[in-house]
Amino acid sequence: MKAAVVFETGSTPQYADFPEPEISNESEVLVAVKAASIKNLDKARASGKHYSTENEIHKPTVIGSDGVGYLEDGSKVYFFSKKGTVAEKAVANLQMIVPIPEDLDFLIAAALPNAVMGSAMALKFKAGIQPGNVVLVNGATGITGRIAVQIAKVYGASKIIVTGRNEESLHALRELGADEAVSLHLNDEDFKNRIKEIHHESPIDIIIDYIWGHSVEMILSALKGDGTFSHKTKLITIGGMSGDNIQLSSQILRATDIQISGSGLGSWTKQESALLFSEIIPEMFQAAVEGKIKIETENVDIKNIEAAWNAEIQTGKSW
Image (cartoon, rainbow, N blue to C red; front, top):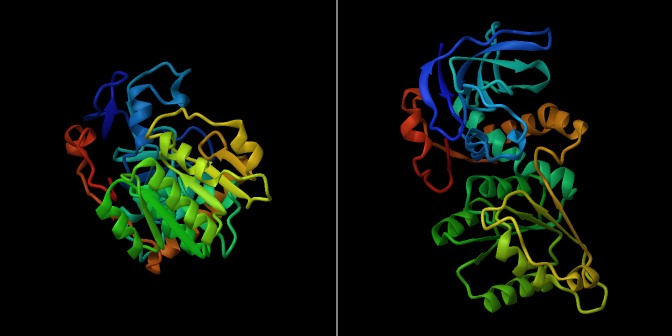
């Protein structure tokens, strides 16, 4: 079969012939793949720099960790696989398959789940979002941040604040449900003062963070308490686009009712991971059918994987 294959760690995937996958046990099924998304996770794993590849001995590997396609009985499904998905055929675990509504386009179904994992899991399980909560999405102009805004709305957030550097994308987020936008181009004091004002007017319950780094330092500084009772805020970090390290004053933790945690592959319980496939992704597929969640995609033929791999993706789009 034809597939996108990484032959050496750090190399660009090649469009090449590769042995067809084989079913190894009763929990696996074969999927005729129609589309598969290319994610930062896939690129990090291919480069050998992702934490999940630290103990792996590299061998020629099909890229991709999820996709959409047809089962042998014609069922239209989304699936997750550890054996590669950017290929004509892939093996999927029966526990990691989600039916796709007939009215949902394959490209949308392929692109949406990764953004859902990077937003809904944090909002639902790490933050415990409740209707009426006030949510701040830090670094919201990327594809996952845009989906986080929409999912927060689906979950009943009463107010959504977004931050980012792309002014055009920040403005567009208002059309997706954001109520306040704060530019990261502001100087530090102006940025912190604006966050303070918003927090005073509508205490922030949840912060979903995609960039970490200095912006988080400023947000924490803005929320710092003054010795009186403070509002409880949960900060969930999902990405580190601005760097993996921050300076955190112990005074902030002692003076502020804040809980800091992360959301990622290694932080979810087995029960939460199971609910991702049985409840969360199906719910978000239906929300997409109903027009409550929108995502833009860019369609690339597998034959052009080499050119697409390192190409710049337009802000707000998914491949």
